[in-house]
Amino acid sequence: MDNYSYFILILGMGIVSFIPRWFPLFLLSRRQMPELLVEWLGLIPVSILSALLLPALVQKESQEFLILFPLKWLWLFLHLSLPGTQNHLEGPLSLEWFYTGAWDLFSD
Amino acid sequence: MNFAIEKRDEKKNYAPSLLIRSLLAIWPVCLGYVPLGLAMGVLGEKAGLNPLQVMFMSLFVFAGSGQFIAVSMIAAGASISSIIITTFMINLRHLLMSSSLAVYFRGISRKKIFLLSYGIVDETFAVNMDKLKNEDWTIENAIIVNFTAFFTWAISTYLGCYFGKFIPENGFGLDYALTAMFISLIIFQLNGSIYFITAIISGSVAVVASIYIPGNSYIIIASLTAATIGVIIKKRNKEIG
Image 1 (tube, each protein chain N blue to C red):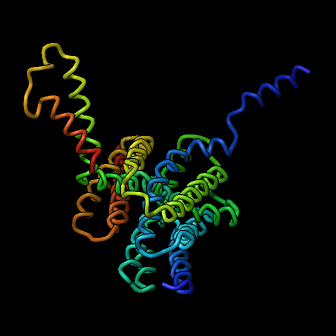
Image 2: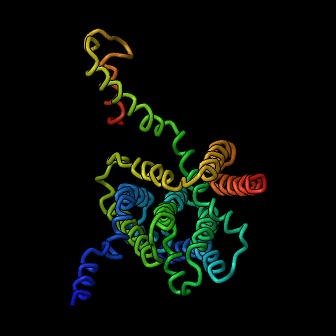
């Protein structure tokens, strides 16, 4: 892509990105809004944040990081702190499970 | 005399300056922007852009997801008009953010509104909303927050493109910094049961809609639905109570 058409591209992208950010503030900050609209707009931030966050959380990699990983640390802690559990567990409850799991997370 | 001393002490104990408070609020976002920006720059380099081109895109557009998609469309040889239309669709969600910021910035000069608007993205919106709701926060604070994030982003994308050949994808493991920050910010937004209910509705609608609707229009759909249901519930409760 040559420099001229690239400039046209980013200029166009800039304008269509700016207008949705600017127009409501420009319009609404200058006039009295009805009570119901203010209440509705008050609920918008938490709605947007939640709509951005939750789909990201249910993606597979995020699940691994945010749910599985703390669980593994909790398990390690219990493993080392409870008497008599250190050497007897095998399979998915063993220390190897923790170490290999942690390694998988960091080695992709 | 006594009065003068008192006044001086008051000044000494005064809270950190405007600039410091704004920077303290935004630095975690910047920390998350660096790896994201580097990744964006690396992608740009792979799409055949040079560092200056990538940086100018960041300066003109300032939209994380929008830029990622634009760069991959450039790499795929898409037309200019289709890239611009896609960017518009992706960034349409900022309409709602801008509207809800308007509640706090009544009667502010057009110039400041213009400056503030330029830097409204998901992360700066989240930080500013948290501050506006919970403490004394002026439009100057919000503008500083927005532009700090903006320049961090632009410089990171430049560096990512410049050093693109040496940086492995996801090489920093900070990809979750922004997700973690959103979780904490959303918790501070929950100032009552109605906010909690709205958040649950919005999140659930978003999860379901994101599966069935391509693109990211699910964000707008979920927010509009949840806020409307929230207002209806609030009204009902008032009428009953």
